[in-house]
Length: 405
Image: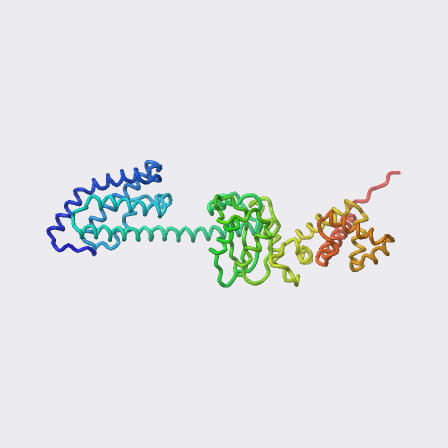
């Protein structure tokens, strides 16, 4: 706290400061215009608001210099002169630049008036800088709490499929930079959840995320980010399963399920349904990888009554094979029923084992699953059962045509 040993000298200094305060404010505004590009580019109304802050700071300093002990919070009151939207348009860094210019102009103007006045300016500028940081920190904290609530609401809307017309604007308000394909990742919430670390990992991978914590369940909506300079070490266009592997340390122990990839964020509900259904039955696969794709859990999901899984198995496996060749369906049935034995299948079908081998390769070419693997065999056999049951039910529902005589 500055202290003048001569009350008369201090009174003269205060009177002099009040006389030149307008001159200091005018010089400060001109210096801001000359040295700070962001200030020069501002609309006139905001430039005027910044000028009011500078003038309030100078006036507050004179009042503080007159009675430092009686006005302990006067520095924080400087910002009351500016409209609320100014805090949203002027960053903390720009505010500190404003303080620096104001202090420099004031120091230049009062140079030679004594060390106690210079010391007071330095002390007061420090108080204003701390007050600025406090104002911005409180604003950021309030904004962070609002963003967290909004993000939870958006994720919940995606999970429940209750999207409305406001969803795109809510997502935009969260600063979502995702574009193109999206996938949903569902796992457990760790006991010590570091959400900032998870976001940093996502940025490094070049993806954007929406994060929802629902008790013991942690949900990530993942989309590729088109924000400039989103990664210091760009990883390129990674597949979503690889992205899930990189994000895996941010989840708690237990299963981690990746939903199917969808074209855009508005379709994320489809990926979420698959991921949630897979997460519910993942324990049924004893050696499920981490992460595991929801489509690799189609048999377990189908057995649990998931209609989407049943439909997926029939449309991706049974119908393509049936449309391609009846021999492929028959061979696959026989191969699976005979414990995946080429010889037993060949004997049943009265063909050479090489013919069975060739047809199984054709099966793999048509649908992308290899029947010779144990896990794939389970998926294919489930699809054949569901397809056959569905076909029989469809035939029973077909009306019988009357024959004309």
